[in-house]
Length: 109
Image (cartoon, rainbow, N blue to C red; front, side, top):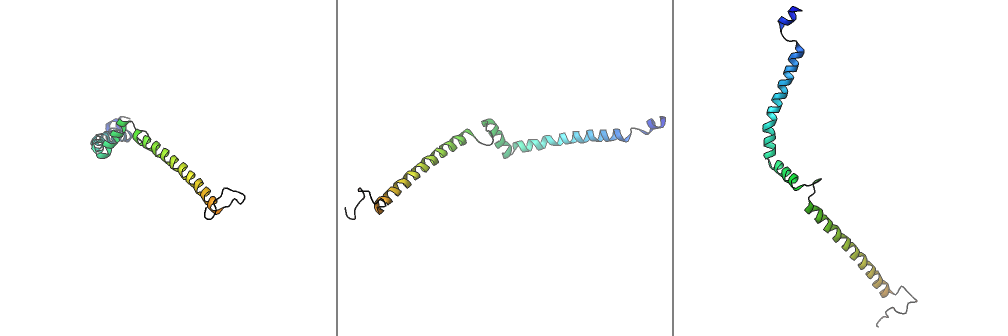
């Protein structure tokens, strides 16, 4: 047992020391890498997004714009349906598909 102490630390303790050094070196290298990333345009855009309080990549302005566009699409859809109904009415009126209808237009009236 005396000889083990003379030889120096065991290989397990060397591995632990090596692991500690690897962690320390990794942390030291992460500081400049993180500074470069945060100073880049991507980092600045990320910071602006956080400052505006965006959730899931959408801003309040974008949400408002989407709501406006949805309302416009609904209006246009209703207008198209109304035009389709009016066109169908005029087509039936001109063709005279309702034979018993006395209000249809004659050929030159």
